[in-house]
Length: 270
Image: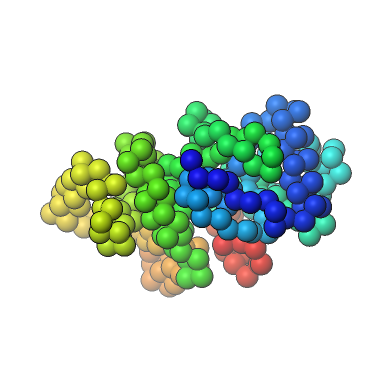
């Protein structure tokens, strides 16, 4: 297994904050998983040093997590109630994440059931599963941030051991996005394309064949908002497309979408 990202680049204050937060969650038996750069490094061996620390929790555990952080003397903010809150210590912060910003990839029991043991900042922790990391990253295709390279690197590192059935099921009706990534994987790594099992390619190909031979749906929906909160606003604002994020087809309310859209210009969010 590749080594986790080095903590040597962290200053002592940041390191103490992150470690103390994890210790407080452990002491209070609050379930959490470490994601972000630390989990990515564990799976791929690629180290990235970022200013934030990603912790994944169930949405239902936010209030407990908030109180634990506040009791420890840290400021908190439920920045976007549908997917993320924060805990602050000076300029340092922890993202407490319960889904992707598009409302997809919500943290549920399977995240914890398939979590991987790792060591972060000298502490034994559970890391988010690689399949769930691919699920969430694979639906991030913003103009300023495209996580396709992360997906490709994860498949390159783990393709032969991934739970592909669970991954396909996770994508559900968004399976075309997963298919796009595995098509690109074969383009990026021709000598490693067999790391995506042949049955996966066969199933995806059959789905595509069946779909293109069927009539277009009558409902005018834009799924672009699932992969980018900004680049497809014209489609829903001017061109008469329904927003695929909106309930009941999606998971978000109109108020959540408006709040998330208003935050486009805020530093630190995507």
